Length: 285
Image (spheres, helix red, strand yellow):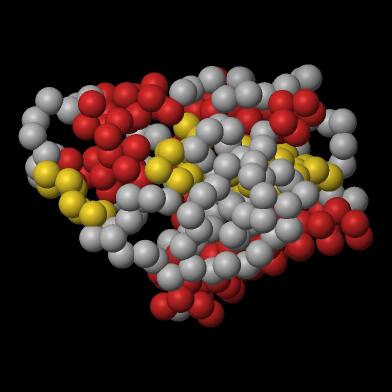
């Protein structure tokens, strides 16, 4: 494959920073479409002078679930408009769209969860992602935009925001006391570098004009197991307390079936959860 130009929205975010570094190491050109670059993706007028590109990876989104309840109009309008404008850029450039969705399966009807599992809008954030997935499908069907939708499970890695579980645990760890709500929920975690590697492979994938892929590890860990694993790598005393508070609409277990990503893209995660946790903890030092 020749030299590509890849546009990345949300390029300054947790995934975006790692992805743009990886794209540059592949010697492809990268166009950063981000508020830090003075570009508001929800304002179409600001996108008139975007240079031509071959593929757009759409990462930009509001993703903090509590905010989706507190200010739904802002949340829905931002996520929908940025996706619509990203798709318009793809249409104008005859470019490929890679849309980073989220976990949209709600309470699992079976495990592991494959891409054919029914989807369920179990909070406004997941609902906005499903709306945008539908929009991607429409632009593929009506305007022949080559599209890959990626549904990551729980991504983690160095420099992730403290609203997420693992950074929250590590932030409390330094204070000598960890207080969490519920030890039982189990999640499938995917290390940042493995997710980025999948996105890069998806950029090069050309065997189909529309596909949806789960990206996870195929293994899951409970909150309590994560805490215990972290404490194994910590040499100071820590008090752990569980409030045994169950969040409303809590999903007790997720587990990704990643066989489609393996079979069609030739991707499997390289980083074990134990190794990933070690890397995150090393980054703190």
